[in-house]
Length: 228
Image 1 (cartoon, rainbow, N blue to C red):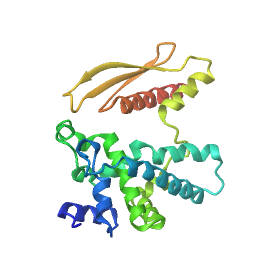
Image 2: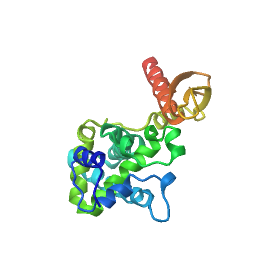
Image 3: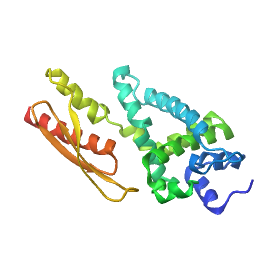
Image 4: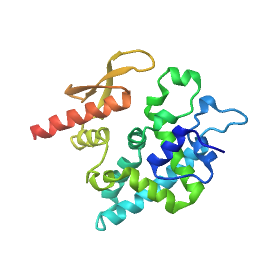
């Protein structure tokens, strides 16, 4: 199989030239355009998630040889969660080479966090199947780069940290309320309030409910910690 010019350029961006280019094509094929003769990237995504996890777990152990499991787990989660994979995907312009169906393209699929994260994991698996674990490891470490060294010591997501703050004070878990939704259907913008039992709250606006919830939780947690 001969790759198109945009896929050849994408190979250069990830730093791996495929001996089996069909693997790269499959990794970039979303279910919205798959067919009986064209496989989508879901199985590769499943494998890539595991390869990424092993590489990150090993890298974190090597990065901090004295860290406890309790310290390592949140750092690990911060590096492998879908948001991190999508950030890396944006860094290498993965969205521009995704193969999507017409409806998914019209709804802004090339910018969707879930699609980008899934495809990034699928690309990792494609490299693994093409050239083995060390090749996949090299690609992951190169693309994640300084993220590994700079991941916060306490990398718990903000919602988890806020919930633990509330529980430590015998409060019910915080609630998340959608205050407003704006923008077109293919690119909605949500405003979410993170609210505690006593009515204390902070709001945030983002392109996904999950991101807005995390931002609101972080803002509220910072506010609460400043009062202490």
